[in-house]
Length: 125
Image (cartoon, rainbow, N blue to C red; front, side, top):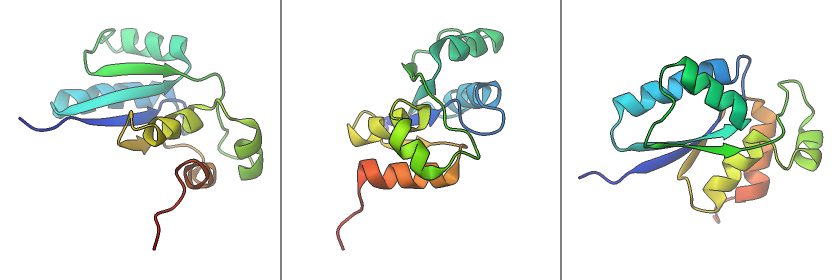
């Protein structure tokens, strides 16, 4: 049996957020049996999209609630300083804590890179 991989997925990131990310997560779970997904973002919105997609309960899917989002045009420094409970930051924190092995976000690339570097640091060498 393959070892399971857990991905934290920023459900609020990108131009279309939960309306695109949640159905994509469901498709990933159907395609890859050894995958677990943690959808990070506004729990009521995520739950609503899961119901809309006809998949309200998925045994390999969890939701991690986050109260903030980072806009696509938001300055990186502002996101780092003031958005400590953003879906992006919470998703990265799940990697830092070892709960997830990877983080995926379609959100603000600059904020993603800066937040990942700040939270996860860099490898020596």
